Length: 148
Image (cartoon, rainbow, N blue to C red; front, side, top):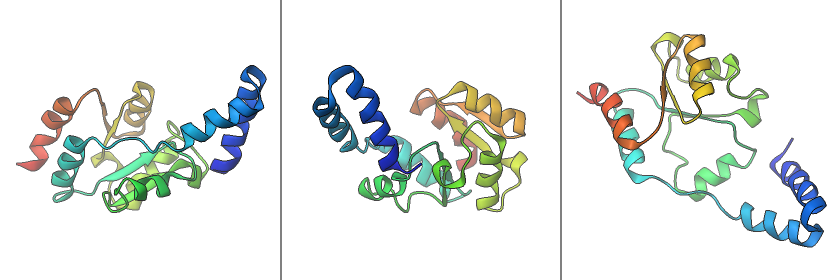
């Protein structure tokens, strides 16, 4: 479903609890948020990108690309795999395969980083190396060998 359809469903679900007008206001306020950029992570990924391709893989909605542009991240990755566009979501192995294919990489030479342990486990079961992201210093220590 599209981002608009999904947000309409969220509004309907909330309306049952807090009323239609309040639900619309809450979803509108929530929809205005695009997140924040962790500049330390972004700088680290830019350094890594000088040596290997970096692919963003997200279980996002159809507005992901607009959000990335609004945050100034439209060109921060070599490829973007938005599961809303490919019809399967993490932890489905086809997501990892699509990411590797998008940069012509051997699946077994890919590092998958995610903050959801189950997604990391699925990536490992698919043949990727996986890292459960917890903080930027952990990421930096993992990626430093790629920068040497």
